Structures are given as C-alpha cells and as structure tokens.
Length: 268
Image (cartoon, rainbow, N blue to C red; front, side, top):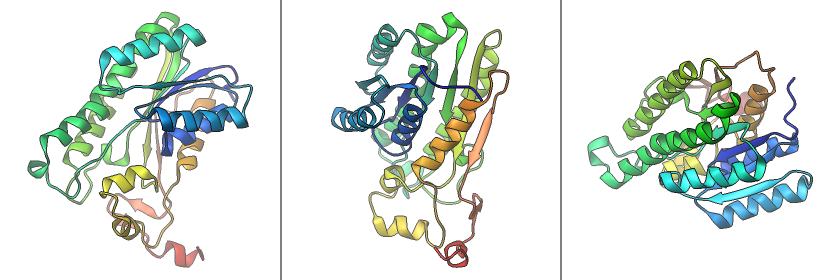
C-alpha cells in the first residue's frame, strides 16, 4: 500500500461534510492538507481540529469561491509555493439546489450557481493544479467526487441541472484521463450514494422532515464512509488505478430501489 505521509492534498468543499471527513482522514495518514471553501470561519474550525489531533501535519486554508478563476489560480500558486507541489487533488465541492422545482421553474441564479460550482469550479481548480504542479512533475492523483446520479437520472423532479453536472464531470474525468497519458497522473472518480450530510439537507431546502422521509428505514452513508473510500483509492500502488468507485448504503440497491426494512431487520 502506498504511504500518504508527507504528501500534500488540496481538498475543495473542505469546510464540512464529506470534504471535512476526507481532510481528517488524510491528515491522520500523515498527509499535509490544503483546505478550500468559501467560509473562512468554518475552514479555521476544521484546521484547528486537524492541528489539535495531528500536530505533525502541515495545514493551509484558502477561503475562496472556486467559480473565480483568478482567485483559484492565485490560491493554488500560494499552496505550491508553501508545500512544493500538490500530490493529491480532491474535487469535492458541489451544490444541489432548487429541488423539487423542475428545470424551467428554477431561478437562473440557481442554475448558474450549480453550473459554476459543479463544473466550472472543478475545471478551474484542476486547470490550476495541473499547470502549477502535477503536469510539470508528471505525477499526482486527482479524485473527482461525482455521484451515482452521474450515470443515471434520479426518478424525481429537481435533478436536471445536478444530474447534468455530474454527467459532465464523468465525461471530463474520462477525457482528462486520456489527455494525461504520458504521465503518472491518475484521474479517478468517486460516486457516492445517499449521504446524511449538510449537502442533502440543503438539497431539500433544510426541511428535516423531508430528509427523514428520504432516509426512512435504512442507514445512509456518513462522511467518514466516503473518506474511507478515498483512502482506499489513494493507497493503491502507482501502477493501479481505481478509475471509478461507487460507495452506497447497502440498502440502496439501485437508484430507484431502497430496502426500507434495513433498519428493522438489522435492529438499528
């Protein structure tokens, strides 16, 4: 298994949820972490937790909006100047807004925000990291956090933009993997299923009853489950690529089928 000690990972959407869990897991394995998100206060809190638990690990926070190319490129420049290179890029930041509104019912502002974060922001960060670190050294691992909805449309309203964004991310990852041939750069995709984080609560407009109904009868994933999946992907030797990994609750038998008796059967 490949060691992560001393490597540097840049993680977007690192202020909470899956991103925070990934940052904690990588720090535990000895990786330095560059934490990217819009909220400086939340990033500082995550950084303090990591520094308290793993004092040997170096950290940096970059409170930027990844939809701003100049801010992204400058932030990556600063990170590379401090750490020397970016070994791992986790494109985790993402938004799902406006459900259950159908596409034509969504405010254009929400459409732009989702496209800007889920597609343009991912491309900006990847572009900067490749140019400033990974391509010159011909090394690194990029993990794009997609979704099981990237391959199949969810069976309910409000998913047109998000589904299209994740389908685009799948295509982008496939193309990037081809274009980085001639290097040791790995381009990998993680596809989470249903996860109980702030992301989903935001998705249902902070309606806790709607969230409870969605997860009724089974145990959804939590952030640490996805962090474990990331560690598995990163720990493979350089000659091995887990090009795509789906991580879902066992009760999520398919995108349209949930075992709602899971908790009762397993006494949860």
